[in-house]
Amino acid sequence: MADRGGYRDRSLVLAAGVLGLLIVGGLLAPLFAPYDPHVSTGRPLLSPERDHLLGTNDIGQDILSEWLWGARSTLLIALAVTGLSTALSWIIGLAAGLWRGLEAPLLGLTDLLLALPSIPLYLLIVAMVGPDRRNVILTLGLLSWPAFARIVRAQTISVRGQPYVEAARAMGATPVRIAAVHVLPGTLTLLPAKLVLTLRYAIFAEATLAFLGLGDPAAKSWGTMLAWAFNYPLLFFGRTWLWWVLPPALAIVLATLIATWFATCLDTWLNHHPARTSARSQTGTFTTVPVPAMGMSAPAIAQGRGTPG
Image: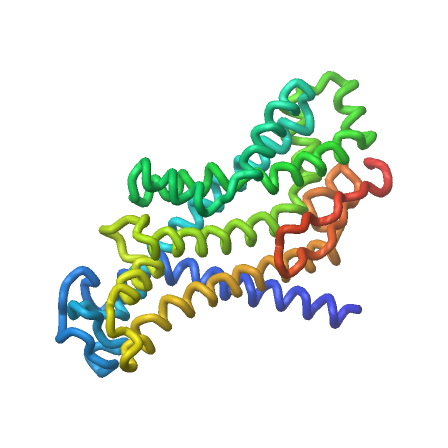
């Protein structure tokens, strides 16, 4: 058991390190780009060579520089969307689970957004407000919280019935303190699943919008690279697609896989180290089940064991 525990710890550290390198490398990518990606630096459609390791596009821009700048843009948008969506999921989920007067309107709004088709709705909103980075972040972040808000609400309802919450309420704790100090820690076991689902969703959604021409036209991103590549009529009549299409497409897949790997390792680690989770502090022990591969099924509602001590 000790060996398996050590393996889980090492896997988590390795996954966190790889994910950290991906994020830091993406944010610092402009420092490593050999050229300005907005400037033509060679003949059009050059194959990979010493001066252009991934060749050039149809107007002579260095594809490696585009790819590196695209990593920064895509990851910045994905991280911003993840932060905004996660905050909204927890705020609305806690509010709906703790305050009966807010439950019906918040659940009604949640059900309405869940009933709407997501991608067509994003396309409509971004087309109306304008395709720039801020609008993309706000659109994706403000519309991607409902599914997990319902899960957080269910977890909140389970936690609010625990004896330590009732004791805090009887001692005069304010509703805000009960939510922040006593209920919130019991819902954080859901956080790894939320982060990975939203991160990989944001990467895919941003790439989709950019590919359809609704991203920031002045910014380089992996989706924008794919859009310009597929606009070239002779793309697949030669080998150009190998260095023009594959790098951004593989980057999207790789970023999603790394995020999923990290979340899986973190979820496994939390399940096998209950004494170290934040839910332990005066709340008993909470357990979750691993997130399925498709990701949208909720972890089982945590079950409290023991009494606060």
